[in-house]
Length: 425
Image (cartoon, rainbow, N blue to C red):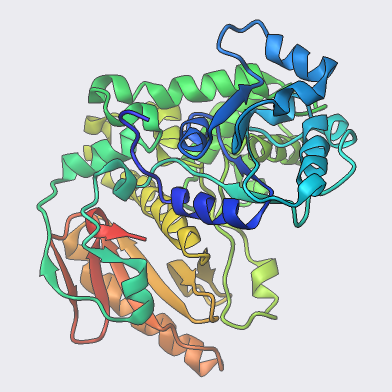
């Protein structure tokens, strides 16, 4: 399709269509699921038809066989509007065993009543693929001079990279990775995340949950999550934060229910804890690092601007970290690797950990300014030594990902420095 920017998920879709009868692409709204699915489909059936008449949904509810009339692979968009489609697709895959027949897309987790309409998991027939907003490499804002694959091999070639100034980095965070923001003038692009949140909460929240929502408390929780972006804030911390800043009474049970609903809308994409010992209880006991699916959601909820970020670089540092970890997740999952964070009971931590499929891992610190690289490298070495003393496994590589460095290089202590605007999968 004209003007389509290739996504890293394209390769995974192509491979999966050769191995499965159908695939299901899921994730937040407005991240380009339908647009990407269309690159791989030969026909389509849109449950949420553009006319807003819901005619297609009524057709599917009346005679589900109608949705399968078309050249394969056939895209069935927002299939969760008629949950019975899942079992019907599974049956169609079993009919002849052919591969690459259907592409499903969906933007919300099914409600319990919708789940009750599905009888089969689809295992072995339907491959689930999660999609995210655009990384800097996908949007054209990273040169891709170095990849996570290079980090895995611990063979990174030193080279100069493009110059990036602080305002450029701030604008990338505030704009975010929603495809509709990429080629829009910046002053308009920063309005899109706020409109995105409003529409998602107004239109989708009550459809996916049986919980009765107080929209004012939902908004307060969203703002608290924004203030705690890139931290391991507990639910009690969120509760205290809401009451401390807004003098609003909200209980733990309500926060838990609301967080679950936000997760089911794919607005939240937390970062789980890591330990090199797979059986370690730390993978279970430690808190997840809190993130929205895109850092622009957090900055929009707090009405951040370029000037506000310049005047509060400490706070902006958390949003920058969120952008880097958004990209690391996208790059890692493109290789079937996983993103974590590390934090032990002694207060030692790595901002991010990429666990490779052979069980080895790379430890990563994230810093906005080049002046912080020395501190970050020293921390990586200190925490590595602590892990070794406790009988743990040392990282395969150690890396500082920086916002304002203009070079890729390996320090004398073995720590690799990479600008985020030079990284790819």
